[in-house]
Image 1: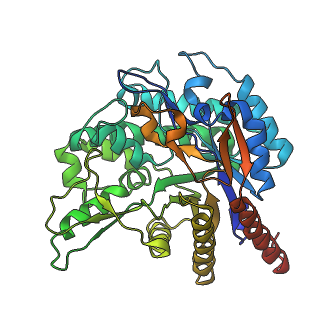
Image 2: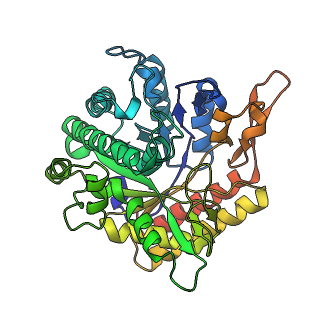
Length: 424
């Protein structure tokens, strides 16, 4: 029996693992493991996840470091990390592509060999750790990838507009499929694939329906990569005409319908302060990264919506694979309690929700660090169960805060409930 089939709710954590190593004038490399000093404190950080009651840890591999040149693979550090997971009996849910490609891959996601390159990398990782790791996410938040790199011109390869978005979707989706196929060939029936995307929501303050068409399009677009890889995009799909106008060929859609990969678990990321975008009556429809839409905090109503929608659309068990609230301890505790209660209520109503993930273990740094000039501490986001507190020489000490204790209480209560019900 696989872990998500035992009928109980599993609690886990994540380590922020965004990797955009490419630099250019006015843009710094963005490697969250470097910024948070996880490369230095990884041994401790994994232990903190276990201390807080995490059964699993969403943790990403920096592809650009493991594969620094074509055909060159450096495994020593990763071997030690995987040994530490095993020592702690902490289940790794491995992110293989959490943004960013190696610096040697020209044009990044647009490179004609990208699908084969990411598939080779994924297959090599799966083969090396097949005796201890079976849980993988081929691509974290693929629609964020395609928007930031293809629609907004924000990350390499800096495309913009709908043509750029569709170009990114085409290559990224093919790489997604080939990576999962390669790993499945290595791991066989033991493989567990958690597909993870951002839980986008779009609402309007209009009472006249002026945004109905735009919201329908945006919502359909938010599912696009997952719809492609699961074979849902055909001539009758709502986005088929739009895809065709912006460069997606019939043979691309045919290929996806012939090469379907399905999630064992459908992961959804939801942040109450960011996940619900608001279209405002009388204002131009926006959404470019330089002119973002307004947002609205729909609290657990939004969480209920995205968990329910993904479960219904894809028919797989659902996990909340990222959530948190940036702010004071009191606000974080309020969201932790409310979101856990929401998930438990949905489970009691019959929804098959198998995982809850607080993201991340420690504080992290805003992605705007990449474009900024301020010292690192200016960009710190107070999100974690452990604060990152710099000393006079810049060492980031991990300082436990009350959210860690509350998370442990929730995780322990879930285990106790399962035990009382005879679930192990």
